[in-house]
Image (cartoon, rainbow, N blue to C red; front, side):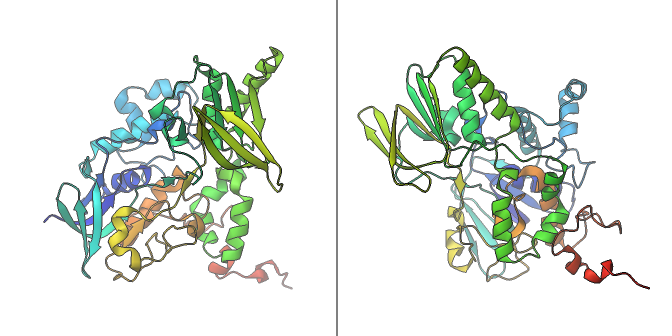
Length: 436
């Protein structure tokens, strides 16, 4: 049975970053397994023209190892597009091009394998055994789970090709010409689907966009907002109380979960043009919470209520798109260990500062989890922005060596003195005192 130091389950952006960074450590034996036959990143939402919300420099490796061959810039060079890309003065890449870049990394690494789903992970007190559907198994000292979140589909939503989660929008491609479409959810995914509907040649007869949010809020952006997506902020975040974290997460919601201004403005321009032409085929309904979706013949009856109210509002649609986000679940492959793992209130795995799952296993055989740290590490955790930095933290922890710099460590104070940061550094309020 082949033995590894690190085995990654799932090859999405986060485990891919870990694999790419680990490739620079010559004596570290790693393997990463993906159930799909080839790399794919949200293929059902790869809507033409959709752009990344983060800089292309925040790729799989550059923030901690800019000399890596697996950088986005090296990808451009290898494809012969570096000068053309830079001439475009792009602040970010298209989602399609960034997905192509990640596929180039995923299929270029020697440590990655595709098409053999991992079905179970067990632990015998000395290490992990990873069992694949093919019957093959491997041993590893450490495991990193990066299988992603599950689509959040309301219990009352009837399953079917015409009532689908946003993640399958392009996969299923329902016929839309002359049909009524309802999009439920006011975040970026819902907005991108609405914009796609407004631009499609097989135009629907009517579009209804329903959101629980009080408005169609755009993404909070800017230099100070970007400070939330830095290692120093994550360090300070971990010093805060649970109460303080909950309050801040609510306050920061639209720093990571709003509609990009470009998408919002494009939708607004299209709606204004329709209004100028006298068309009334698009209805926007913010501040509504959908309570029921019932199939009636070949269409759907959607019941919603104004948030905080009781009076029902009804609309009818032939196609319903659920842009209702994702939820934390325990990955199926971890079921053999389920009783030993500490969980969070939202169902996610509880993590320590080094992204280790908190459990009753021996410390020398760590289990790491990706995209489970929104409460423990802040709003940057589900974003690509800190993927390379998180990989560096994990690899430093796994090897017990300082292989990558994970903090500035220049001796200079940080740009912002976040709550909890001064206390961690041993600096109190007396630093502001005046001495005679």
